[in-house]
Picture (cartoon, one colour):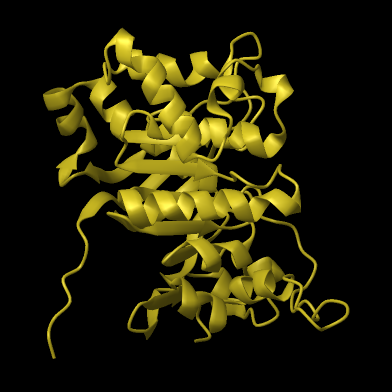
Length: 326
């Protein structure tokens, strides 16, 4: 059988750790927001990071955009450690290559500037076009993201657009500088259900036709399967299950992944499936915490679960999970 060449790894994370001080305390009192996280982003593919609030999804993205510094672990871009890439190419070039789309499409746009300004500014900052050509590129980008008529849209202010239209502006601004990677942090969660699919389809086109790699952060595991080739489920800063989206969503093995899937409504069925979880506090993980982070809520939990972190178990060719009971 002919071997299929895997796509190029654009960005990779290995054993990533991020600690934050709790309150006004010193280094002696820390919360571990991300713990031993490892994944890859391949060219023209999407990785969905799924989990509820507080799972560490957005923290990981902010480390990749250098909003936060990592505590430990390795992050490489195009085969080089990020700092080496920046030392060689400059901070601005890395920022151009790795763009972010934020959850709030209104809060991420400046209300006193026109849509034209929001898209033209990165073109000028990153020297992607001469001033005389900027207007043409702005209109092309607005057309690409489905905002027409382009001239009238460019003259408007953010408050004159709907939430879905504002998010399309945010996407146009991100792709204006021809990035390799887009980190999309809950890009549809604040939008009406009726417009969410349009935004996902737009991002799919950018991924498939323009080769942009996406890290798609979401609490909705159903949209993860729709948009992303790979899915990683996170809980309290830990990756508890990961692999191909079809495998993770169709055959979830970790109790937390099963819990997320049980909350997804099924067409043709009334009500929700029974949630297989016990009531318990979501733990605040610390550097010296031990055991499985889901043990306090898991019906399968035994003494071993509170004593040691499960090793990764391979479920299938592209499917792994951390659970003592697999």
